[in-house]
Image (cartoon, rainbow, N blue to C red; front, side, top):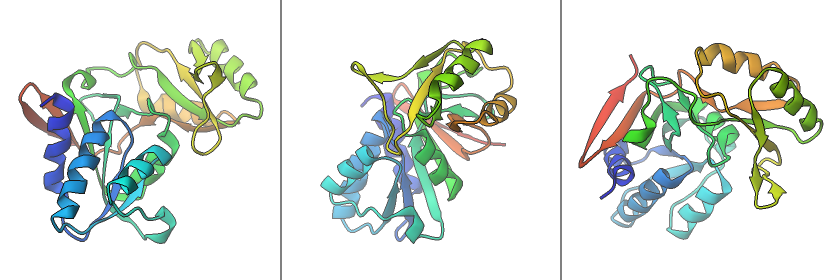
Length: 222
């Protein structure tokens, strides 16, 4: 069993019968969804809110009930992957392009758990490119602002075409190498007109489950 699967299956222990569960997006969450489907067949009763069309499609195909976020007052627990996470449990997400919905779902949740393999746990954020979701209108102007700021931006593509998110927006990935102050950077970027969301997830995760070799480590936010 690889580290992603170990972390995903450990997170199952936090799911209780009757919960409204937030399902993240990405390769690690794939293992969670498959295990969750097995438990539902055995009698576990949960309703799930999805963070992407991809997750919804997979979950529904396995018999998992998906409900609209607007139909629930809150989410008991969201389990999601993370692209980078530091010792303060600030993270970068959005590698799969679902950062806007992931942040909305996380903010509507009583508890958030991230699951990851050991290489995602880093001393300082920034090696992983920072996704920024922007509206298409004027996106080239936002792109130039990022160049002027020294953020080394690239527009995300899918094949030869611009990548479009589930909400119809574009993603600009910033090649920063290191982020000294993730909270300050998040606030600065979000002030730019045209920016919808920044994939810095600061002070959001309550716990991170890291797969390490043949075991798991749980790190809680202090």
